[in-house]
Length: 459
Image 1 (cartoon, one colour):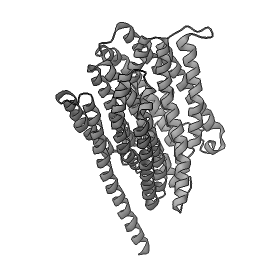
Image 2 (cartoon, rainbow, N blue to C red):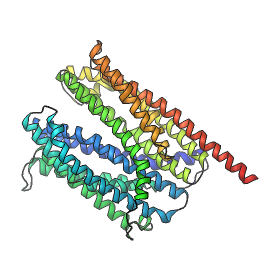
Image 3 (cartoon, rainbow, N blue to C red):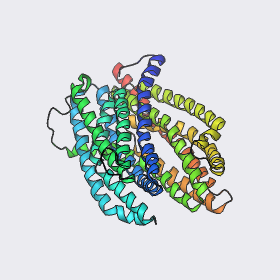
């Protein structure tokens, strides 16, 4: 990354960092997609078991993974402030913290897994597959969390193409392992859906190993000497990372878990409604990769400018990111409205499912517009290391407003399942408004500090 002086330079730098993040996000999303689709080719119970296992793991994994996002603004600000010598220490503290949290997750999961699955009223075969899938997946959690810390370090340096290449390399590894372990090829036993869990765990270890090798061997990373020295554990730095990371992680968990809860609440409706909801939500999630990637890029760039005390440039990047996000969302929304029948047909051949999925996809358009505002602001605020209000906003907008409103409309009006979608749209809209207000407050505060600093220099 480098300092920019014109709007064109900012657009080029934002796009250069953004597009590899987008490719990496879509690639990582595709791993979950192939786990589900390939397990479904084994048997229906395998498909159900992996789907249930994923619904349990994804909110937890995404939420805890969000804690390590804190490394990105921390390193980006150190780069901007030209404190390169402190970066290796911060990254190693993040790795130590990731290993500790992974142990806590595995131990906690060992006690909580059976009670959670027993509450779902699953058939014995599906419950067995879900349990075994999650146990196999747990073997890769330490590697996954360490990889997320290392990726945060790489991204903070603006080297997002490296993260993209690592993600692209991991996808064929995951698909190949799925093929071998799910269906029992080249002498391995056919494990069905459980094989998808084993494949994911092995892929996580490959990810961590590849990333470690690149950081050690490539000159642009090796100069930071991340693994050259042994650093003792610093509880003070853990506290600082958790101060930023926990609100980010909780906010991500709040956002992802509400969609999982709505999916469970949808189980009271007929099979057509459930299938249509899952199809529409899956496509909406894929489209969300665009504003999510812009959010990640803004965390890097805003953190870099804030660290360099160039608050005006930080503001310009935040506005540029929002304009880009809204523009992309408008294009996606137009495509969705025009081709929603074709999109729905990708997921099912049943006419009833296609028709209802088309109906739900109309509400996905409003998802796009709300996310186009909220996601870039979240990324910007993380660049400022302002994360507590984001967490509170997520709690209020989704769990206090969105979910209760959706539940009421779904169960007490003629809207039925559509009520949940309206509730989610309402929650997203409230979140976008709340985050925009917070961004204006934070930027006004930094602007005043910038003015005061300039006046002090003149005196």
